[in-house]
Amino acid sequence: MNESKRIPAHVAIIMDGNGRWAEKHGKPRYEGHIEGVKSVKACIKAAARNGVRYLTLYAFSGENWGRPAEEVDALMGLFCQCVTEQTPELIEERVRVRLIGRRDRFSEQVNAHLERIERETAGGDRLTLILAFDYSSREEIARAARVLAERAAAGEIRPEDISEKAVSDSLYTAGIPDPDFIIRTSGECRLSNFLLWQASYAEMYFPQVLWPDFGQEEFDKALEEYAGRERRYGRL
Ligand code: IPE
Ligand code: IPE
Ligand code: MG
Image (cartoon, rainbow, N blue to C red; front, side, top):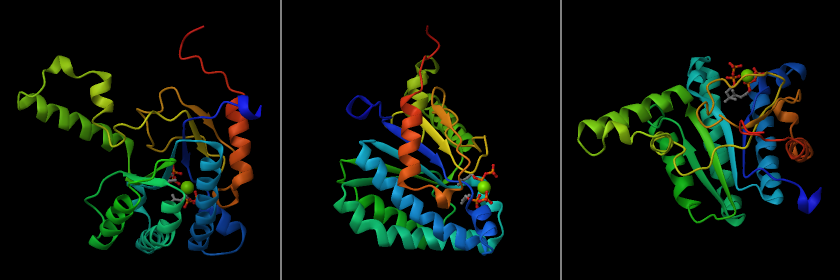
């Protein structure tokens, strides 16, 4: 272990269990989301410290718009507040932020925050933090198919040029290596429309711990789990 320990280049996390954490503590759901922000900060630090190069966090799914308006508004507000508060530290820690997901359903104010954090952290070269916000994997794949079909119709590419690489390069995650390790907290064992294409050979880990209780120690424990996995890619 230690220097010889295998570190995943790309860790992706489905941050789940904020509502259950709040319920367990007799608090409104919103308090669970606020508490979850501490875990976000802890995991960014732990990822950078361990030499992880890409950290993707599933912050808001396309399906989460179906939650009550007050919860959606609270999540949007919290997201903007965090992004603004954290930007100086992210710049200092050389963390570059990239957003994946739709950009056409946010308010102008939310979009302005997203654009700002991407612009201001663009120089970060230590860790790329990918925030999946209004992200759904099937929408991403359908969008890629549309882009490729339009390019073929315009005569820019031929149908036979549509390779796996061409699809990957048309996703929101273009240029980002596939996740090596996907963690979902709170004991749920499903992907909930997260990185379906990219996850084809990812190792999966489903700890019971609720997201607000997932700190640096839990992150390190997850990396230990990954280090003990054997990846085979269909070979012997
Ligand atoms: C994850 O926690 C946060 C988001 C989906 C934004 P949940 O809000 O899904 O918490 P549970 O699953 O209800 O406990
Ligand atoms: C997945 O969690 C989305 C995020 C963590 C942002 P959900 O709590 O929305 O997923 P389901 O509904 O339990 O599958
Ligand atoms: Mg949930």
